[in-house]
Image 1 (tube, rainbow, N blue to C red):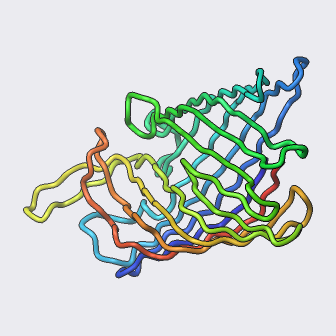
Image 2 (image 1 turned 135 degrees about the horizontal axis):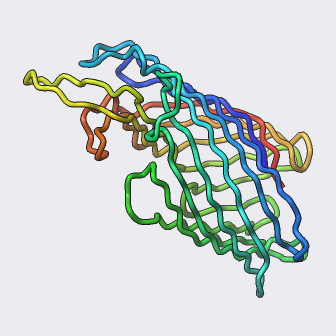
Length: 273
């Protein structure tokens, strides 16, 4: 329902680094129909790129990117433990070189999910299955991306989740602590408002209009529960895939800033139901 976190990713074989602050809140509103809700969501991200290596472009306006996102979701219960959910959203994601927001700074998202929730207290092995489609103009693809995730608590102290965007195995030795191993996806995409000239090795040049980072992460995590719903978490690990690149207006790759795998740290506080 709410989260505040900080992520730090130093780049291997490089003096560059990436750090990110993220905060979001989801506010549910109960509707008259039993089990149905509207959920308003708000999110802010601040991402800092520290360039120390020599690169064939000017990094003056590439050190800070910000995202402002708002969304509205609707969900209701169906038969046989199933629930439907749909979400639409809009975001502004840019390095904000100028004093105004441009059309290229704005992206839209949409998603639809079917959720089979069998996680009641009377069930011996609680489980949850999520099947969905997610579409974003950020991805630059004219089709939605499938999302599949299955969760099960197969022992009083053990649970697992398999699928996208996260696969993990979690151990809960008591009410206050949890340990997990995981593989997950992360990254960012942002517009470069005034574009960027990239000089190639042959002397020619290209124009970069946006920047992206794609990560596949593996690691371990620790969670401490202040209450049943409020917890502190700290994750650490290593990237299995790490790519930061500049792209042109058609999403073609122009220059890879970094692609060496590296370790990362992420920590924060979240409130969940």
